[in-house]
Image (tube, rainbow, N blue to C red):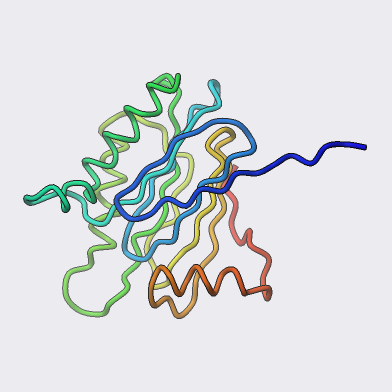
Length: 179
């Protein structure tokens, strides 16, 4: 009898990041206007995901910990410490929806920041799924670079979206997969 492989699922919340390796780790997050950058080294089989709210911090540690600049630096440094080589890094970028009509489009600002940061750092971009008006649930396997996205309709809050996605069986999860 073959042994069942235990899968570890770790949720990455706002202002957080997580790294890991192996095929048995799945990182998840739920995004609206926020952006997640999933980075991985396909040769070393290590990667990670962040989740940021704003491109840059104006002041204060709470805002800084949730900014794209801070999130990207922490993620890159942690992946490098885990054995990744900078020249092998690949990125997949998700989120940046326009969740509220009128006012500043923070989702577009977050998306532009992430794409420009990756370009400036010379990191290859293997997939982009940003914009629109719907929330997204993301699953990412940092050891393989595989990513899945599911749109969340009627996105109200992270908690409500997580609850709905656990209860929804109308569509299979992988609407879009980036390998």
